[in-house]
Amino acid sequence: MTTPATPGTSATSAQPPSTPVAPEIVAEDPDGMRAIGARLAPVLQPGDLIILDGPLGAGKTVFVQGLAAGLGVRAQITSPTFVLARVHPDGRLPLVHVDAYRLGGVAEVDDLDLDADLARSVTVVEWGSGLVEQLAGAHLRIEISRPAGDEAGEVRRVRLRPAGADWAQRLASLGLAPR
Ligand SMILES: Nc1ncnc2c1ncn2[C@@H]1O[C@H](COP(=O)(O)OP(=O)(O)OP(=O)(O)O)[C@@H](O)[C@H]1O
Ligand SMILES: [Mg+2]
Image (cartoon, rainbow, N blue to C red; front, side, top):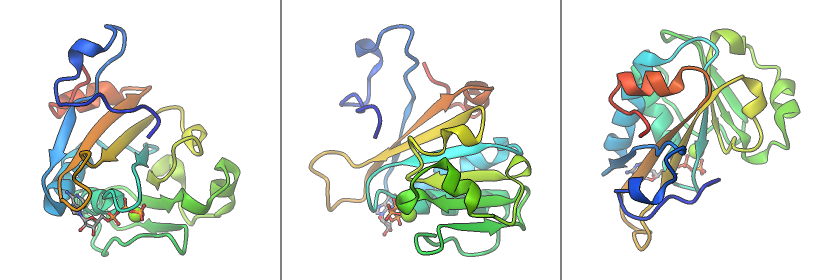
């Protein structure tokens, strides 16, 4: 997590007016997380970069499962931890799913020699914060956290943080605008 989430669900009052507050979405269970990913899929465009933030077991890969299904990818999405990246070419847009946990930097993403053109694909990077922002001129950061004291529970909190380009407008079109 780059920015600690403001406790509670009504974060607006504590923020300076110039800082848009990403809405918090609650995923009650894995299917709820997949539904958030699927909801985002229709607004994705070639060249998009999505950075997934959150601790081990947060639900990043589960989120990608929903996003992939929303794009029409038929393959089962599993963690690419041991292969670093997988390309799923069969959806509305090619989906490049990267796990940057063991990558040292953006150069290594380039060195993966993916069989995909990132400018024509949607690239989703688990553990990509601070590493892969330079892959594109803009990105959507998705922060997934567990409520404190709920280590064993299923509830996850998801924040969508648009950075650049028209991400904020696209989220707004989904009813997920920063405020
Ligand atoms: N609300 C929820 N959303 C997502 N996953 C959940 C939820 N509740 C329970 N889970 C479980 O938590 C686990 C999340 O695993 P997942 O592989 O998606 O995490 P991850 O963030 O990708 O971890 P890693 O950093 O190891 O890649 C799964 O076993 C999933 O079933
Ligand atoms: Mg994962």
